[in-house]
Length: 185
Length: 445
Ligand SMILES: Cc1cc2nc3c(=O)[nH]c(=O)nc-3n(C[C@H](O)[C@H](O)[C@H](O)COP(=O)(O)O)c2cc1C
Ligand code: SF4
Ligand code: FES
Picture 1: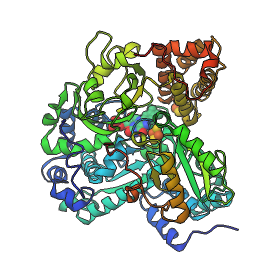
Picture 2 (picture 1 turned 60 degrees about the horizontal axis):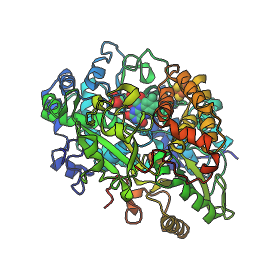
Picture 3 (picture 1 turned 135 degrees about the vertical axis):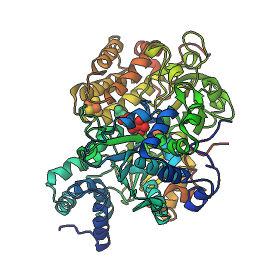
Picture 4 (picture 1 turned 30 degrees about the vertical axis):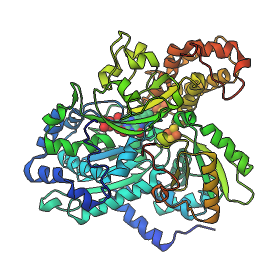
């Protein structure tokens, strides 16, 4: 079945297009792919990409080559929450490898796998611009920083209970999760 | 404490909101520039300030602005580089999060100076929530007549747009960023032509880092000459340093350029010394791409002179004994750090992020990762060290963009300064099977 954006999203896309010169609407591709991933099940299927191509009058290949180039786009279905743990140098110095192991053990799945209840997928990503508050992971729009085993436990519980949502930014949870750059006492 | 320019009033509660920012002198530079200065006079102040690009290369901002092709009849663009993906760097994010209006004010004055009627902030897609907050701030500025049509009643109009990326380190490279902004893969372009002649949509374009643009309001309000008095000679002004790793107080610090490195690491006003009472082993001073230095060389130059946080002092000695200020991503490692493991980690990063256009980078980063992986995991051979040096040499300077150099330098410098650790790994595979192994061949200093 061909996917279809909600009328709200379609009107947002019209506004989006006005932000680039006429004739340059291809510039809206990355923002629209983010919308498509959010609205069509958390990943970009071939049908979703073809639909986006038709909205911007592009050849499907122009969309595929972009969608496959950038790491934020998932090309296969994922769990409801994708836990993307930073694995790069500074976070590794602060214990990121242990956090990945802890998550694997706690959820009983390996990297790039989804828990049987369909809730969680674990992934490793590169530096998230949060190196002073590592280890860090991103889940949706939320950054969870200064990870410890306990913090991972409370994050998983909060996500399961719906107390923490992955479309809220970090600062809303600054009591549970410290904001990057604030000094440790 | 060092003086604050970028983070001035940063601790006032609610400073991320328009009204509070305005009450504390915000947007003065826009009024001053639009009402009393011509665009070229603004460019002149920035030239006089000596401000150098804070994205990594340290190129003079005023000079870059004066290269912009003003004779062309095409539109001109200002693009702000908020891609911030260099490992160890998180200062742009901090600035935008704390004081979003400082960047927006900077974008308005800078666009006025360059004659751009549309400007973009390209922000890495992972920071989507921050992109939304910037959009809110832009909405506030617009509602107060500081953006949009006829700013402050003048005939100058500006449309400011936030554009999210999709997750790719290479899109921090300015020409890859432009490709990405045009809705394509982030493939760096061959230069020349430079963006000042042919940039976004083939039009004259200036690309500047968040921190560079955020310094412009102060320069316009107080004058370029005042700014040039801060810091030391060619390293004028203040710089945001992102401090991470084994220190007591990680975080973002605004320092006056010229601060001694030793004071930055050990003073309680900054990093507060090495965590858990350990000792300093090595520092990567300017983001993962710059050469790593052992403790003795980061604190003092080869000639024994205390090193300062300036472009010149950090690079004293060239790559043999020096490094670079880069983006100011200051990564500190204590004596429990395995340099081989860290080098392998960085090699994996560059291999993962290579866009794949040029073979020396695409293949070379892969080989380096593979060889380092086998050394770290107990399967290295004595020839591997020279092999790594050889690969690094064959990448450096032979690629379309600087990612190739950025991948080669950390590896070449780790071997230059810590060769004995690589040799030990190869000679004693049995001693490094524990993933938490610590290897400190210089004894317990
Ligand atoms: C691989 C690579 C990654 C880069 N990443 C960034 C980045 O994340 N942010 C940034 O401002 N500059 C980055 N740069 C530097 C930009 O190409 C460009 O020089 C800079 O944005 C210019 O702004 P400035 O003169 O204000 O420093 C990168 C360069 C390379 C080669
Ligand atoms: S040097 Fe690497 S990242 Fe840069 S263009 Fe070549 S392959 Fe791409
Ligand atoms: S290294 Fe993990 S956020 Fe930068």
